[in-house]
Image (cartoon, rainbow, N blue to C red; front, side, top):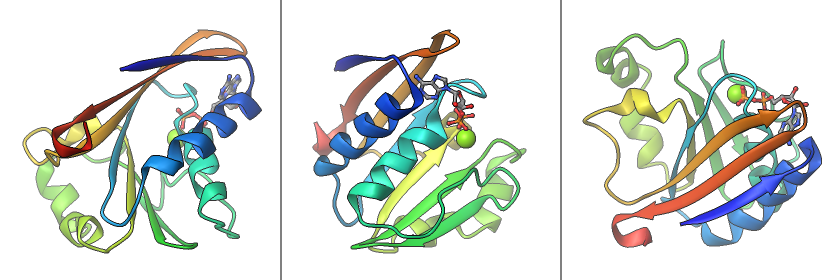
Length: 142
Ligand SMILES: Nc1ncnc2c1ncn2[C@@H]1O[C@H](COP(=O)(O)OP(=O)(O)O)[C@@H](O)[C@H]1O
Ligand SMILES: [Mg+2]
C-alpha cells in the first residue's frame, strides 16, 4: 500500500500519470472517495499517460466515457447507479473484457461483481487543496 499527499489538482493529475505505468490491457482500477475528492482528475492523469487526446471529464451523466489512446480507456462513474442490475445493464462486463484499461469511480457499488485482480485508489479530502491518495493492489496485481 502506498500513500501520497497531493497539494494541488495538478499533483493529482501527475500521480495518475505515474500510476498508469502499472496498467495494461485488462487492468481494472476502482476509485473510492467523496464528491470532489479528485477521482476524475486522477483519471485525467492516467489518460495523459495513454496519449488520450479526447477531453476527459466526469461521466456522472453519461455513466461511461470511452477514450481512444494507446489502449482503449473506459472511464465509468457509478454515482447514479442504484443497483447491480443497472450496472450490468450498461454492459459493464463488456467494458471489463474490452482489452483496455477500466477505471471506475464509486467502485463500492460493485459489491459482489468487483474484479478479483484490481488496483484500489482511495482519495480523501484533507482541506481545500490537499488530498490523501492511497493505492493498493488485490489479487494478481499485488
Ligand atoms: N489536490 C487536489 N487534487 C485533485 N483535485 C483538487 C485538489 N485540490 C483541489 N481540487 C479540486 O477538487 C475538485 C476535484 O474534482 P473531481 O476530480 O471531479 O473529483 P471527483 O471525481 O472525486 O468528484 C476539482 O474542483 C479540483 O479543482
Ligand atoms: Mg468524478
